[in-house]
Image 1 (cartoon, rainbow, N blue to C red):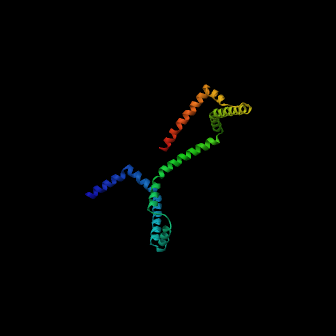
Image 2 (cartoon, rainbow, N blue to C red):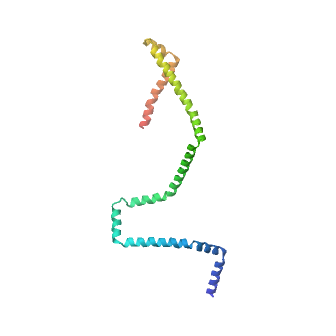
Length: 187
């Protein structure tokens, strides 16, 4: 009685649509599965023959003795393999960035836009440098043309000037601040 029920249960399972679909897929993939099993069998056969061949094992042992492969190296290799998914993601993102940069570099409109934006930032700086250079040239020319001798009284007169006073207050603040900055770096 049990065998009849067992057969009926098996027949019911075989008549199930999901089971039929699964069996059909399995039958379709069966040649590739057999091929993979045969390759695995060949690999295992080669491994067994190498392991049983004393000469091959001696050569392998000799090569391993001359390498720096030890437990730490194997553990590091395993840890590196564990990080491969992250490294793959990072590499793919880097590839996307490089592809984007290549596209930008090959696009004349993008290059022109970047140059215009850079010019907008560089122009004010270059204008200030130009103004500073003009000021320096004027100062240099004034110094070369000035034949007056500078006395202590002239310096005392300068010290009374509000702009010189302001400049000297900056110098004094700078000199007061420097020791504090040096002490912070030492700590």
